[in-house]
Amino acid sequence: MLNVAIVGLGYWGPNLLRNFYGIKDVCKVQYACDLSEKNINKFKGQYPDVQFVQDFEEMLKDETLDAVVIATPVETHYKLGKMALEAGKHLLLEKPMCSNSEECQELINLAKEKNLILMVDHIFLYTSVIRKMKELVDDGTMGDLYYFDSERINVSLVRSDVSVIWDLAPHDISIMYYLFEGKKPKSIYVIGNQRKGQKVTEMAYISVEFEDGTIGHIHVSWLSSVKIRQTLLGGSKKMLKFDQLDMVEQLKIYDRGHLPTQDEVTVFQPAYMAGDIHVPRLNNVEALKVEALHFLACIRGEEQPMVTGEDGRDVVRVLQACDESLKLGQKIYLNTLTPFSEDRKGEISKTTTHEQSKVS
Image (tube, rainbow, N blue to C red; front, side, top):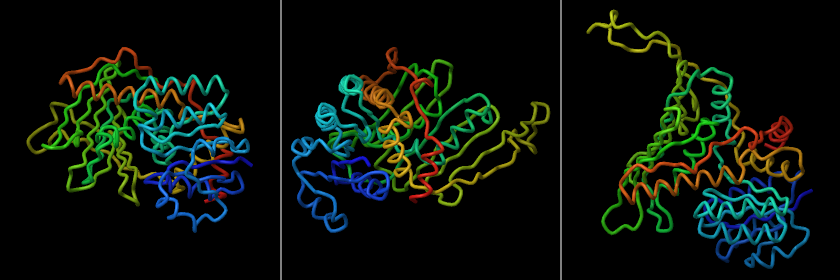
């Protein structure tokens, strides 16, 4: 039985607390930590056997505590994460991993030195829909990949601590990297804006060019009157459409079908693709529970991390390149970025999938 602490009870932390608390046969949530007494009082009654504390440093002195899960503002991730690792605790960090790649690398090095698990909460990679998309890429169903195109927009309160790129784009960047495993990004170009009087970018279009010619495009915005969460993945054989807001048909597989030849195209028969659409069956197990079980299995040495500190660092590098492109108004070439590598990334085992079903 592993003892876990959840740190940060603002927006995302309560979801982590609920999921780790719900797998009592695997771990015990020993602590929940937040500086705000108001946040603590919201959850004390729901989790009577959890110790709610405000002193993070004092909590780390408990030698029976095995792991820390941090869901605090990004500017605190490095400091809190370093303290947790130095105290000998395994670590799961909310996205984005840190404020810059140098801080990420320091945590990676420290975790290796201490022989501790360090993972990053790229939550979409644990969803059944993204894992299905990856399966279709890996087994050749998609053919050669051509493009990744995503839109993550809605009307939202503008944050003052981070831009819309750092708030929303980490989801899409991590998904793109996961599906484009082994592809190396060559350059990034970003167009964005902010309204008069605002301090951060509120809307942005991110274009990523990979060395093999594959294209990635990400649109993020806090200013849209409609909420859209949609991803297209195009290949030589199929196209995938992931609509996060469609609870019935989240994933659709479009057959490339027959493309008319130039001689066949007329004003009465335009060059439209004709093909079937398939909707695969997906399980609806909460991704956070899958991630929690996987994190604990990695600590026990039963699995290897699917989302490593290196993966978190690479996403932060892309975010930094986005900021640089916006600032300079030009394309940024990414000579230092590395692709996700097969030998570094682990997988979710059948054991975790079985356990996930059992506790759901």
